Length: 178
Image 1 (cartoon, rainbow, N blue to C red):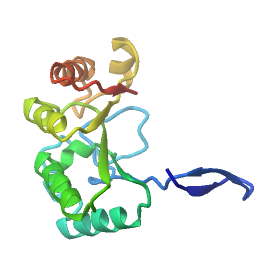
Image 2: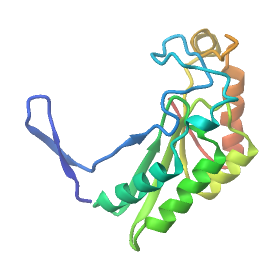
Image 3: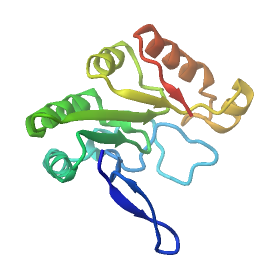
Image 4: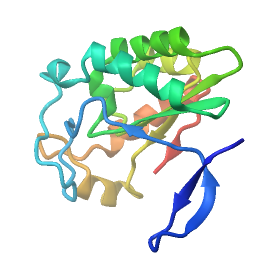
């Protein structure tokens, strides 16, 4: 795999690595209020349909990113805030556009870093079918997690995150736990 040089702090070339981006389709919006988070616009997740990346920008981003990637695998990392707030239909469109613009001989790799609160059967079916890799944010033990990773009502989220991980595993998806 060929790559691009990575420039170190003092301007020296460190290594040859491919160019990678992290995309925030919902910006900093999140359905949690983690006590250490530096984003201040958390909400309950009910009103977020309007804040996701608009369709025209999404199509241009996917087309341009695929075209600019020299490697055989085009990596898309979906991050946030909470990227699942964009909705399942958003990611169905992502996959459709990737297939539309991907030239023969290349493949796409997708990763979502999520808090897990919106993961349900439909999400699992999609993630499994489209071979997405998943990272689920969880802060250690229940005590520590619930102390820092709370929802908009200030309730701990450990039990819901654990349930999401178990559901993903039921579908044969083995999430990275971060």
